[in-house]
Length: 445
Image 1 (tube, rainbow, N blue to C red):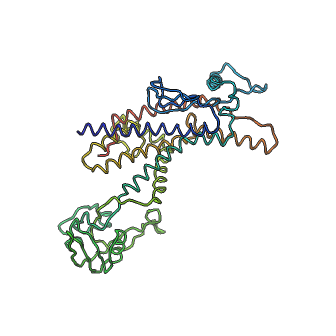
Image 2: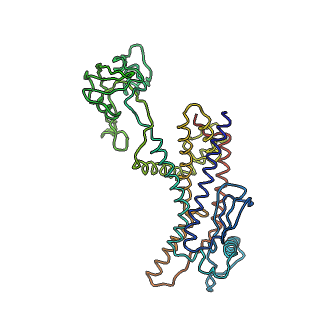
Image 3: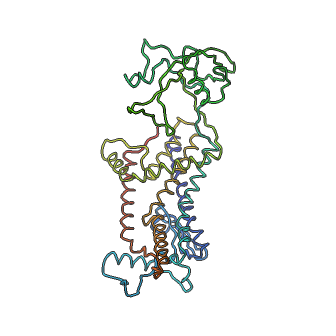
């Protein structure tokens, strides 16, 4: 059964990723057709065609290796300029690459296609077409995160006691001596002295009705050194007792959660109450207003990985070929994502609802990663085409401003050498990640 669940989890994520790729290409396909560009192919995967059919002027199909997808539009690259100032072709290998790209782009031109070529579109239309794919991934990721946040909820602390500290170990003691466990000479914590038990729900504290964990922690903090009444519900019965929060020095934090330091670079502290309880976490559905911040948080995390990608890949290489540990927050391949999906589905440490939420979260995370990664302004990624269109707009804008001759479309075919280098690096990076995910995988459990 464990093996079956593992395979099922992998299949769920694989299907989710393939559908995400398909919808990514739909994000390109729909605006391209709306703007009149002739799209010759819509393909999922690369390599030999396994299955295809033609609908109108477009061939739709699947290829052997489902590691991506593409749509083929006529006129992706403009023809070479032949105004006497730029040679149409040379014997150089780089120029040959550019010429090959132009010939491939014009290979399927038919009579009447003169105004249906991609490069002839206004800049804004080209940008819309190229951004359609990444923003489709953003939409999918947002929907997945919305299902998690509003449907399954997020872990929130409750007023039910989940754990007890058996004694009072102040933050100063932990910092000075490294003590984390109780000694025979330590005093019992106020919670133990008040005979609280895991599973108790605190409904009243210091004369106030308690409805949230944040409210309870505020009341405890303000009651440092005072003996106050506490109302506890246990097995449906409410009991009254008293408790005396001990005075504990805690660090003062700024708005970003970082310790505040004084002029001598010492961490500022303040006195607060301590009773020695930890809350039970429960999944609480959140309003729709919580979805955008969660999406932004996920996007920011992926951007952080991309900005430090060389360093992250070095760490992955070290983990794959040495005894260095694997960074669980680093990049991973689809193999690693599938393995995590299998572990989530097969584990007996979480319930079925949490497993479903975990798989949905994985698909959402993959789509957020695809959104960010495809915006990198390098060919052959979508961001590279967007960058070329923006540069064309800048050139034409300056030409118009200074009343110069229109420079025409940007010949991004000249960037084919860069494209091949980037594609090669992506292949190497993918191979390294797959190898690392096999020999040194990221394990959740």
